[in-house]
Figure 1 (cartoon, rainbow, N blue to C red):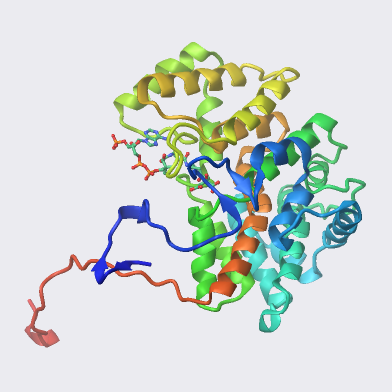
Figure 2 (figure 1 turned 45 degrees about the horizontal axis):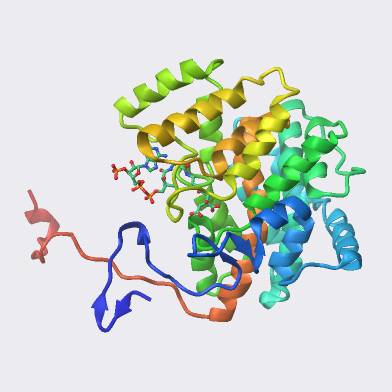
Length: 378
Ligand code: SDX
């Protein structure tokens, strides 16, 4: 891409540029829902589990009952981490951002379980699906209490395991399922910035772990995955919807962006938002911070009435995660734990393309100048 009939095309932020083919998902295509390998996000969120979706993305088809059972057991068996990785995580300070911890953990694992000659990348993908939650929560507890938690859990799902490790208690069915649905929703989204970053790294014939570390770095920023944490920081300032509306109008005056709203591809709505919004509403019922839900709804209403801008997946994920008892700084890492499935699918697909991604730039620097020996420079 980049050259059409010898004409260079230019688009800030690559907006509207078709940068390649994918058979993994459709985002914002006329007449098509968001789907993963042909299955609509509504069906997946209602009927499937994150493990089925990870299998679908990584292996290309939905598993049958026995394949899913084997896959779940495999992921459970991949939860424990090498001693060297635990020791590395123990060196990281409690003030580190958990996204930096995950990026570091992935790099360390890439040194220990080197991707030899690009063997079956799916083994490495399953490894990360199985153990990213372990990395995150092991570091979280050790850095705060000095305690080396056990990574053994009765929970058989990625969602339940994470919640169990985090709180040390068996999660409720509702919390487990909300987490599961959110992991389904976050798992894949075509050529978003972090997936594209992972594909760029892959296109140089680099290794799997480098591509994932690149994806984590890109996801961290508030214009992308980091928006769910910023959305939480906004809504938790308020206890009433009226307060939220007043501050939102002040934000408009200051011409600031409201994180968790808008999207590069979608124009009217993000199909994932209503699904996680319903979970936020459901869980608000039993919470002492029930007011966060009406606060969020008012922000959504004012954003639409005044700006015609809609919430993306990140906005209601914030309150839903909060109601599940997840600390705010773990919101974007949860996005990683899920999106690793989509990134892996794209890494596999990009390897099949085998073409270096290397666009051009328009030069805006100075005209050619004569070189002055250093003693003659003023
Ligand atoms: C994700 O790409 C993906 O698929 C990503 C994702 C995935 O699953 O991988 O869906 C996950 O990253 C969701 C997005 C999370 N980011 C945020 O919530 C950050 C806030 N949103 C925005 O900054 C913005 O909407 C972007 C970055 C998401 C998209 O930006 P674009 O396409 O570059 O559009 P823009 O910033 O140029 O905005 C166009 C107009 C501007 O107004 P004008 O200058 O034309 O008057 O819309 C306004 C913007 O100011 N605008 C907003 C806004 N989003 C757009 N104004 C206030 N608040 C916002 N959130």
